[in-house]
Length: 338
Length: 166
Image 1 (cartoon, one colour):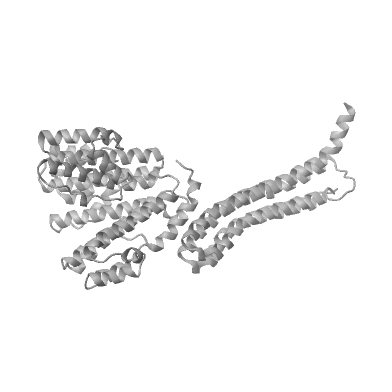
Image 2 (cartoon, rainbow over the protein chains, first blue to last red):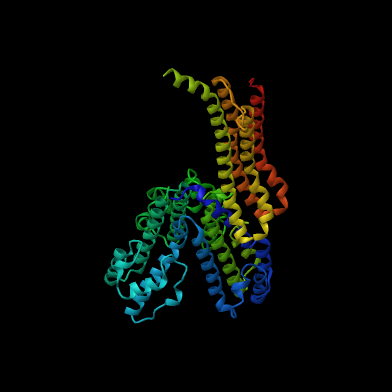
């Protein structure tokens, strides 16, 4: 871990970079915009203007957002004293790529097609290297313990064709690696945040499994160790109505957050509301260090805020494409950092 | 042996004055350099994104530098008081030398710590003006609060130096 004093420059630069984040006024204008071209015009007045100049069609837009996020990751990676702080945030993309490559492999073996179009360059491990290593079956060159995990996943698929189990193992490994990296950094704020993300993911998974009428014993393997909430206690909630989860988790930071969710809507909307509440909660938690001029947590806080901004733009785009209700769309917007 | 003790007795007074002056300049100056370094990191961070903020940042960067000046001032006053700046003979007792040495300590200690904390305050203020440059007035006042205690140290050092009878 670098000394906290080494973060003076990085935090100041992050603070200055916050000017590039979209404020709520811009998001409101995008929500109220009539069509895709109006949204592009609004984004053209913001920090996205340079990326948008090369964008011509609606289908390019997703790539534009990805390129913008990639640039931000690379820019911050260049000046942050502890590179693992950025790597932790990029792990989700590394493991997404692993899933895509494995599923493509399974598809090809089943007579289908590769879906490399779903791969992303946002991971911390170079995408080309990952493709080469997986394609040439040089798994020993893969990072994050994938050298042993991938052959195991392939064996499971060959024996049972159980893709869900493969995904479960990969997700489990991702949260393990996140926690390992956070512990290597030895920064209490980051460890606490990774644990909160693990707990949050467990709560989200539990609600989704509840929808499919999983019982506690079937749901338990899908929950990840490493959070602050004991998974045996958490899994027992699956038989309880969601309204009572907030009270049951009152001892943790999640109690109040879950208690504030409107449960009168349908299951799909409930999951959306929980996801939004969780993502806002993660920002609130990691953003607690924003008033310090040298707190390393400012780095993941900015990156998470940027991720949420991109998510907000994507949600607006999808809603516009489907002519969604503006009020409902407003409710789906993640909180901004600025 | 007697000659050696006599020489030490004669020279110890001026040596203690020199020690005091060295502490005043050394500690207060180190604190200032440290504080400016902290503020510099923040200034470099915001100027990478927005070079136009240099003017605002410079004001805040300079603030932790004053303790070094106070230390220098006290050191000069101490050396002058002891007659060490001129070419003439210096005759100080051990107790007079010790008194001048102690008189240098308030600015040495308060200068060192206040400069570091002022540097941290300046860094925080630099972050503040990166978002709200119109608040530069308030941003300067916040780290200036740390200055108060360096000024107290300076004042007490000067009063103590004046109070020593030679």
